[in-house]
Length: 459
Image (cartoon, rainbow, N blue to C red):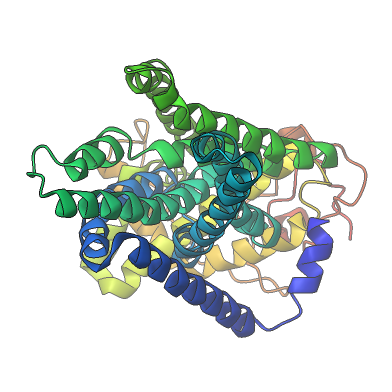
């Protein structure tokens, strides 16, 4: 299904798709802000807007930190945040209002309708609306959706945008009540709402949607089609259940909110923080392991591998390049680091998923190797020096090898590595049959890029 949708939606030019998305987000953004302003009043809207902005930057920085090992394009992250703040919020407010009014009319019990709407309707509607952004990225930007870490980041940005708009509504309404009653600041509903939503639980919506993101991330690593459908649905179901439990906490008595917060929300949040750090470290270990294969084949200097697997060393390499070659050199090193990480994760997914997981491995590998070679003369020395300064290298018996060798490009446009590509036995884990036939240039092994483990080497 995803492949068929990709073919259909890939027909318009990239600029046309971008314009359509911008118009969609802008239209829904204007509509949702006007709806919120009508409900809160103009003074309440601006007060809510100012207070709701406070947790946005820290949350974005936290999720961006998690994805720094293989950063997603900013355009994609801004789309997810915009979808959550504009489109998902508009869908949620319209659907929730309609459902609550319908239930109240059918049962003639407005109180029951509000309870049922917040516990049963809102979690389903809101989590589904946010999950739509993850589905779009998963279906049409699979190159940038490679595992649970990407699911974390995409879900986090989407939920941060959604929580921002929802906080404007809640804080604006609270300020309107205080303004009408003439309540003091410390005893105001606005202060209580701010404490609960901004201080105690700014992570609530991201926590729910991250469960959906983990489902999509696990699906991205699975080679079975059934799991690719089941795992996102499982994550979405978990997000809905957690959201429903959170919304129902105030119905559990006077201290129900604090019981749910202390016994469920805080432990789950701590578990997800630990999981996020573990996923980040695991991704960096995979980068080191896979790039070692390319270093053995001569595509990278051995000293570059530990630097590329260390975030402090990467940052230092960019700084060193900027000092010696200006901003252009710093950007070249940053792109080199991103392409090397993408290459390592591509190989790691191919190793785990088999032919069905990465049918275009050879073509994508060739593309990334070519991009690395174009920037290696600038990025290689900076990374080697960063590895030395960060003390990432074992004691070296002699001088470090040159990182930007002068090997001449092959006739196919890719440079020749210093040694033969790894044999399939050097990196077991993939079968030797099927479409895993390397698209490397003809000739001796020394003229080939690092072949996929398990490839036959033919065309």
